[in-house]
Image 1 (tube, rainbow, N blue to C red):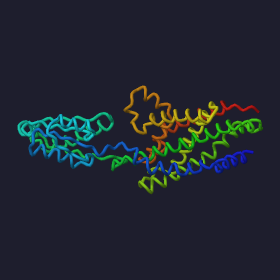
Image 2: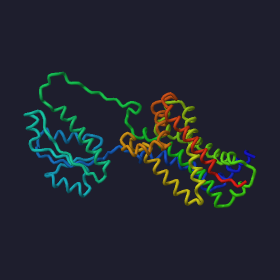
Image 3: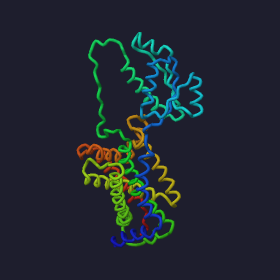
Image 4: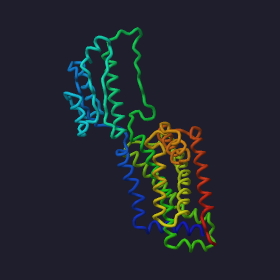
Amino acid sequence: MFKYLVEKEFKQIIRNKFLPKLIIVYPIIMMILMPHAANLDIKNIRVSVVDGANSSLSRELYRKVEASDYFSSVEVVQSYEEALQSVEKSKSDIILDIPASFEKDIVKTGKTAVYIASNSVDGMRGSVAASYLATVVNEYSGQVAQAPRAMPVVEIISRSRFNPSMDYKVFMVPALIVMLITIIGGFLPALNIVSEKEAGTIEQMNVTPVGKFLFIAAKLIPYWIIGFIILTITLVLSKLFYGIVPVGSLLMFYLLSSLFLIVVSGFGLLISNYSSTMQQAMFVMFFFLLIMILMSGLFTPIDSMPLWAKAITAVNPMRYFIEIMRMVFLKGGNLYYLARPVIILCGFAVLFNTWAVVSYRKTS
């Protein structure tokens, strides 16, 4: 009986004109486009420079800014008011105001001050742009400082571990894989069950001797297999387009992905059990998906969140799987280092699937 139930689910998926295309095309589009679009590296920053000093040192400063890869153009204006107008007209993103005493102060005291004003309508772009500009100014000030030093200069050499090039795509690809697994492995089976409720075919299953556990397992197994197919597609695409492959074990990658598939499919079943229509299920799913993505550490580090937000992330399974994927992909972490998130995901798997089986109302 169980074999025929699984076969029925595969036939339903294949007969659907849209679903097989979505399963193949969606991960391809996501893996090709999203690592480039979902990129928090801020570049092409336009700078307006108010050069009150008009000296060789001040010119050298804004030429150094212009040479940076993060800044696309440097416009020298006559006054701060003119620079503000450029910002208001969206011709400039940030202002570097060099005072008239710039060179004099450096020569006399070895230190001076410059003023940075950024357009914070886009708060992320404004703050990051100001940080980049401050870094360039600090590097320049270290080069031109003429104050005598009592101790030898200490050279600081930094190195970024696990992502040496600091390419944001390397950071995003594992997280996008988590999103794809969540959508395909969790929400599609939920929509499948609700569609049977609307069509009335689920009532025919309810009066059969098939147990709740077997019925739900037959619903989920095809989507677990599809989830593994999508995992393989994403691995191939990440290798072909970005040269990114898991540093850790592929076997561990698939085993831990199967654990997360069980978690999200159980969560999807919960939504389907408490939903009467496709529309209701879709709204509830999008509601939870949006919260799960925003509170998962995908875009914003969890350590930077306020305490109440950190408390919400504690009950977000996507947060733990993103942590696992980044550890496996970038650091090659083994089960010893992944024990905590793996144990928590096991707890979510037991909770969601037990709740889904208990809450499923079978009339036989």
